Length: 498
Image 1 (cartoon, one colour):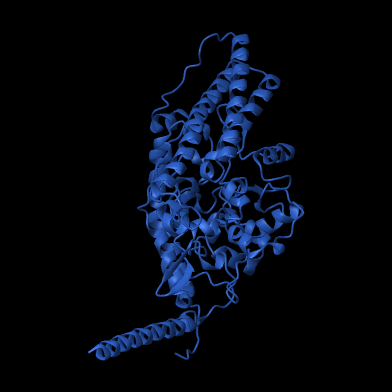
Image 2 (cartoon, rainbow, N blue to C red; image 1 turned 120 degrees about the vertical axis):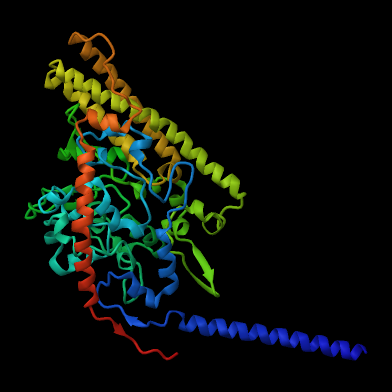
């Protein structure tokens, strides 16, 4: 009897070992053919669906950037009207497109769609002769490096946004970051290469781990449109103000030295700076960067599926995927990790919320001083204070995740901006007193986005009506022509041995 039991146990163990060996061999076979190319990627291929034939797992995970369900304490991957939530921003950005429309950013899959839909990009009558340059497309689509390759970088920067309406139809995707022949990470936007050169660095010397952040830094940075490059006078050349450093003071000094302003505020007459999204710069000042953690480590963690390990291209908040993003390094409970993140965000938010109200009041007080006849000399220092304080505030709040990436630096910047605007408002109160105004300046209703937009002279209903016509008439034609052109492009199917 014992012999039969031993025999059966031996047979069971042998069967299980055989199954294990079969599974291992099957997984090895699957791995061998998992990335067997099915199509040839030729040139700069902007269509993610074509890349997806060779890399289905990465493509399918990227498609999840369409998901807009994620919400955290302050942020969301879906639609959220920031101006409705923080109406005083309308005054801060008076005279600039952001006072019309400013929403939380959605996933990469919406990059082109959101350019079409925002009120900041004009309406039908402006589509052919509006102020937006083609440079505004630069970070939105792999069609951009394709166009730069076909017509030249300077020629691309010399066009209008509408000139490429039928050309830029594919949202951010594979060709923005990968070499199609080697799949190595690559830089496809010349502005980042030029920024490194301006700092005396060679981006080609970057390690693979550094490249896992630098491909993000092609777009998630502060930039401006340089109209003064020799021989390129008609081009709105995308430029990063990194020559003297990545911190807020270095860029502020850079802009002051070249006399650059994004716009002149219509109330305070201040030459203003609009921070874009200095995510990479603030990340570089945080503890994760110092310890060699890349953007992709947290926002595109590795995952396993069917025995295959690959990078998850569902690019989004690490808080939506704590297990794969944070637990690689951290051993705390998930609730404790998220509490730490929210505490950092809350503390910076408290300071920035107070600061933006002070900035709005300073603009209106400066406008009152000008109305009473303040001379340019006395206003110059006040306007510089407003410019510098708002620039520093914007540097923090425009960053995606700055209060987490670099909470100490973010708090320092907000504190310095608060000091500047408080001193500026003291100067304004003295000036107003000298001009015979010895009482508080009357303020508008800061609780209503609509009333503040009317206060600064915006006719939003007309803007929305024009945009509706644009979306119904112009955009569908752009997309139809673009898709028709892509459908004619041949795709080389490769033979497969499997």
